Image (cartoon, rainbow, N blue to C red; front, side, top):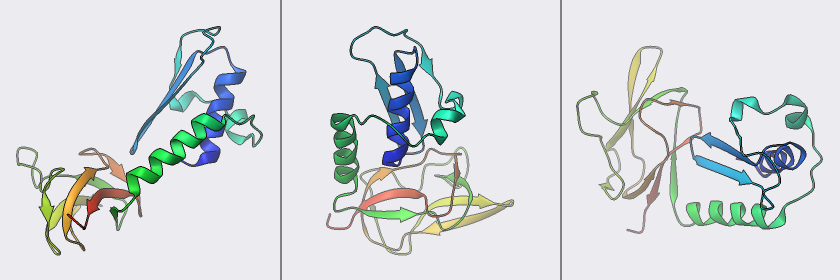
Length: 159
């Protein structure tokens, strides 16, 4: 999630009568809540963010939250190689629904090893590792759509 998107979400919470906002994306989730408890206690799903706020560029900053998010993103990617999707499609961790996943976090992978499948236009495309190392994180859930360039795996090449 981009910093500007985070700022817009903070603005939504500050300007509305909600107490908490939670957004889920492929990389995880972000939850923004009021500290003073003066607002209601509803959760606004990501699809219900008013368009005026999404288009608005101005926001009173919340430096501590933004700094924490930037630090988390830096720590997550520090020293890790990101394996990204080479195409748009649907991500599958295993060759069949009842089969074991190709790789799990903690597994060592080799260059050329099949690590997942991306289905595009009814074609199953085996995605192979272009690095060797230890899988630290699988960034996409099985059966989820992926976009070109989206991170699929985080790999520690030094392990």
